[in-house]
Length: 474
Image (cartoon, rainbow, N blue to C red; front, side, top):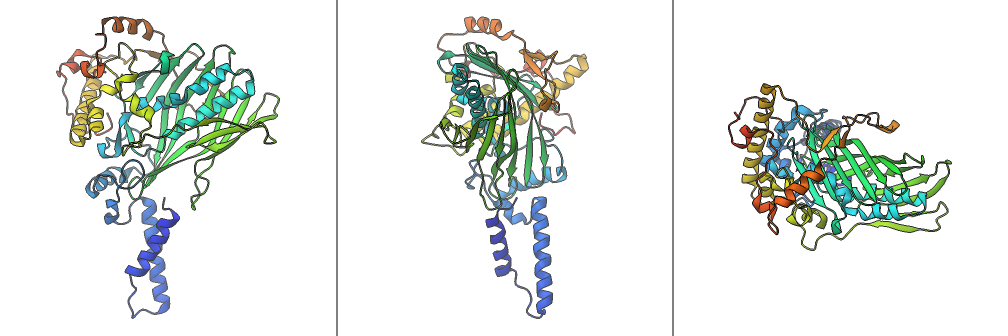
C-alpha cells in the first residue's frame, strides 16, 4: 500500500514532470490529469506502476538500501503477477535475495526468546496475573517480526533443536507436512510444556501479502494445571515489489485459560494512513466471573504493562531486549544470532537440523550465488524423493510427532487449517544414544552433513532429479 508520503511525492512528480500540453483548455487539462491519477493509482494497487520504480532497494531491515537490483525485482514480479488473490505460501520457488538465513522452523521457536515469562507465570500465585504473563509472552514474539526477509521453507523431515538457557529444556520442531507447509514444535521444562502446530494461509494482493496464522498452540503450567491457547492476529507484508518493505500486525488476539475459563482479548491496532497507531496493543483480562481483572497496554515491538482497571498496581511485564551493537542487514536479534550458532545445539544434534542446510549457511556467509544453487539442488532432491516415495507406495511419517487422536479444539480453533500434531515421546531416548556416540567438544555444525532424507537413494544421489513442470517451493 502507498503511504501518504508516497502519494504526495507521486502527485508532486506528476505535476512537475508530466506537463499538460499548452494548447489544451483548462477543462481538458483537468480531465487529463484526473485520468492519469486514477490510472496510476490502479496500477499501484495492482503492484507495479513503472518498471523504473522496481529499482527501489530493500536491505532486509526496512532501511531501503539493499543489494538486489531491478532485474531481480522484475523477475519476482514476473513470477507473482498471475497469482493475485492466491495463497502463495508454497506456490513457487522464490529467489534468495528476498530471504534471510533462517527457516520457518527457527522462526516458530522465537516465541521462546522470552521463555522467562513462562517461568514467571508458573511461579505466580494469582491466576489473573498468570494469564497476564502468558499474554505478554504471546505479544513478545512479534518483536522479532519486523524483519522483512522470508525464512526458507523447511524440507519435509527437516528439524530444529535448541537448548533453553541453563539447560532448562530442549525445544524440538519438525516439518511434518510439506504441501501445505506444516511444522510442529514441542518443549518441556520442570515448570511448563509448550506445544505448537503451525501453518499459515496467505493472500497475495499485488504489492502486499496478507498472512493469517493457523494451527494450534497449547501452554500447560505443571503445578497449577492451567492450560492456555492463543488465537493470533493477522499480519501484512507491505511493498514487496515496489517501495520500502515493512510489516504491520493488526486485529484481535485471544488468550484463553481452558481450565478456569479466564480469557484475554487483545487488540493490535492497524497502522493508519498517517502512520499513527502502529505497534500499539491494548486489551482486557477477564475472569471466569465475567469481570475485568486487569487491563493491558503497550507496543508489540517495545514493552507490555498491566494494571488494574482504575490504573493502579501498574507493572511492566515484558520489555524487548536491546538489539545487537553491530546489526546485520537482516535485523537479527541476539537470540536469532545464537539460534544459528552451535552454542544452542543440544548434545547429539540431529543431522536434519536447519543449521546444517547448505543454502542457509551460504546465505549467512553472504554467498548469494551459492545459496541459490544449493537451494535449487535441495528442492530438486526433495521432488525426486517425493516421486520415489510415490513409486514405492509409501506414506510419509514424521519421526518425533504423530497425528493427534483427539485434537481437543477450542471453539476459536475450529478453522485450525491443518491436522493437529502432538509429541510422540520418542525423542529423549534416541537423543541419549546420539549424544553418547557424539565426540565430546566437537562442533556438530562442522562434523555433520545435512540429511533430512528418508531413502538411501536420495542420500547417495541415485534418485532422478529435474522433472519438468514443477516450479513450486519444494
